[in-house]
Length: 150
Length: 456
Image 1 (cartoon, rainbow over the protein chains, first blue to last red):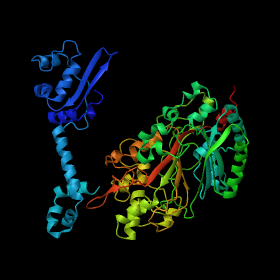
Image 2 (cartoon, rainbow over the protein chains, first blue to last red; image 1 turned 90 degrees about the horizontal axis):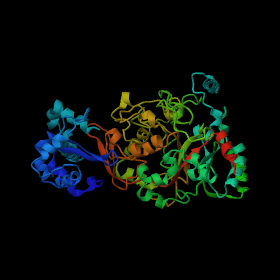
Image 3 (cartoon, rainbow over the protein chains, first blue to last red; image 1 turned 60 degrees about the vertical axis):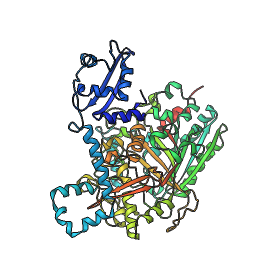
Image 4 (cartoon, chains in turn blue, orange; image 1 turned 135 degrees about the vertical axis):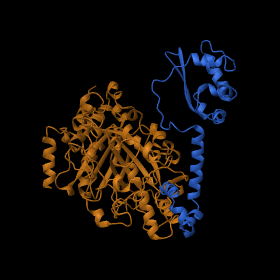
């Protein structure tokens, strides 16, 4: 599993799932216990069925198959099994509690497009064009220029 | 001069101070580089531990401790530093060797990926004997005067040449160029940290004193704890660590890049200054953003007297990514705490200058031997390389490297804040190549004696 991040298929599946920020499998207590911890948007069981259809689902099945009593990821009782084995976190903090994976993807695309626009001579010329003075003076556009300057 | 003498007295006499045993600390550990300077690095291999110890006994009287005398024009010193293999070759007990921090035990070559020595800078391409394990003792001598350097070196030379079982395996002369500047054409050696309790003023009057334990073993550091110290105590106390690096500078590539990305001599000078953070004279962009100011640069009370946050937080004067701002962010808005990552830097130039105005490479080897000193290799030198030089996430430019010191491989970028739209230069080549480096331990004078007197 150590190579999961580098695995193209897994990466594609994570994109396909679209709500999973990160996930880890940890074996501890002298290899007798196992923890799966993950951060995802929305509630856990909403997407579990969809999840099972992906490459990640198959891996999940493989990893959990070593846990006592695991019924298999396609078993109708799997959600109940997960819920029965859940443990809430005592403390959970996030640097971006209001951003979903989808928003982060979107923000990243917008940033890349924004930077590309900043690199064009046409944009610089447009800023110098008096015809655009009104737009430039709007508080909304000023915010954009704040970001453009550094 | 009087003020200097008084500070020494206060520092060593103050009960509240750290009581740093400054005279036991090698001069090569804390002293700022003299100006002008002449110097030499000599690497030695110890083939027989008894010979190595005999050499140390002969070098001890030559090795300088403490601060510069009142007459700075007579500043000169010989310093001794040891790699892990060197301590091992001298027969330091394994238990003691094991007590050194991991980075030092592994050596710089083993840490190459971490500190960004990859591609053409990778250890596979290093100049011998760097990274081979053969460098045992790094002897260095620096002086403001060539004749005095020769006298000091002669005493050392007699010692190491008359000791069978010890071989000179590498030598490098360094000296200040006639311009008083680096091969890239910038004055350096301006900034020196303000270390608590040693009686040596820092160069920035606005810097609060840094705990002595950031630079010398045996005293509390910024965390409030003692830095991890090798055992026995006598070996560690008053010692420090040095990352020694030989860096080739591709001056022609630097000039070509500046020329290709500007349309006038003024623009060229400004772009270069934006990448470095100072003008060629050494005047900082933060204090003089529009043009060079040699008078300001020449004033030691003003040329490093600045912070960033109040007047230049976003980097419109000195870009956050500029070399001097990355490697010493002062009070800039960054991830983490800059005071945990201070270093003493001592750059010395080797090779001939590329004549003014020449844009074609003449094939000559020129660059610098840099010595980076601190009590914590991992938290200081290695952190600075990994987080500040080879990445820009800490200043909000993920992946962007130090424009001057980073290894870009033709794909680097540099962001220069500007209104209304930032400038972002791309396809940066590397302007420096690592020729080699070693992690060394710089023991105090008592520790040197302990090493010299090891038995069996």
